[in-house]
Image 1 (spheres, one colour):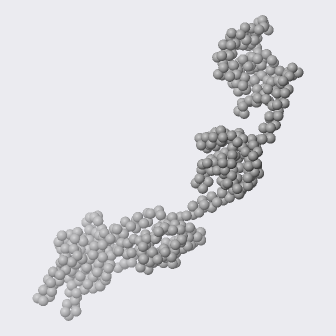
Image 2 (cartoon, rainbow, N blue to C red):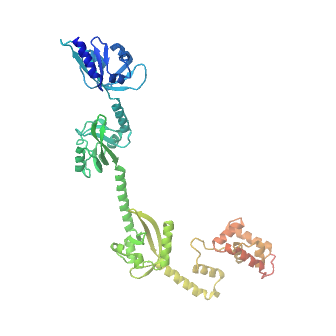
Length: 508
């Protein structure tokens, strides 16, 4: 009777507990389960759990959560029946008749003995930790899938408890070489910019701002990274520090390549035999000049910054400076720009300038090279004067010599080839000029007093000597050499058509 009262009192006590409680009699019957235990198994009545251990075993599948640790052991309920006492065993529970959600239970066992020491009641104490383990699984999946290298350090002993593949790939460590080691053994803050501050924050469990560090790794010996620490709480409420990393190897290589490139540029810049200057685009201020520039314009390399072209009057003609600046602004480059410059010795130099916009240290600049053509210009001027003196009395020279002298005095534009009349008769030259002006055979015959067949014979001879077979090709050849202006074609034609023959029509 006393035992019955004690059992009823026990049931009343455990009925309101949040933990699940299942009582099992010594004959393997399930005698009681509180509401929390029924909810954990997804049933409403004790009978739904099963009348005894065999019935329970047929209705529910129970597996250890850590199967490797409990390999070969009996299920928890059988261990209870054997009188074993255990604590905090994790199991997965599922209904045998459905593929529903698996639950994770944390189980402890008790054995209640009678007054004479004989076990008469076995107790299973249950906690549903499914949500905690699902959260842990989500964290595990997210942590493993994160491409950013990361490790998790437990704050209580500063040992690494998690490491993802990104960190292993970054450092070359094997997983077992990291897990269980301390931050002093695998030092992720080695040579950090503010290591002492970072270590203090780690011990306090506070955020560690990102900073550069150098890891000692097995593959490359050293690995330069940016590291940051973020305090987190692992499932189960365990305070930890999440370290994340960014690889600086590409940036380090890029910086080294940039330094090498700048060194090569500086050497090539200084050793160039052509006067060269690096000019700030805004205000056209000299940033740097090479030795050749200093020798040509009479300024020292170290004084380049004080040698301001606009202020010092480097440009001899303001209009040329404005045109140069406009072309650079519009196209970003200049080729063969002819202008006059004034050196620090007040000498005026004729130069050809080629320039290109470049970016140096995030600043827009212009790299300019100068070719001094003053001597050539003087020679050309003297040649023109001599030609004009000779042509003042041209009675002693043939027409061909006069044409060549005129070409030397006023050369065609740089992009237009000079006309060459070698191999053409005087009449063929006249016909060629009129073809270039767009005249027809009738207009040529009228202008030169030739029969139509004679004009055709001259045109055929021109075709043969130029190696063409179309009139349009002759027109292009003539106009490329300044022998016909398309804008004057109509006027020339009208003039030709009104001109009377100066010779009787030939029948040759």
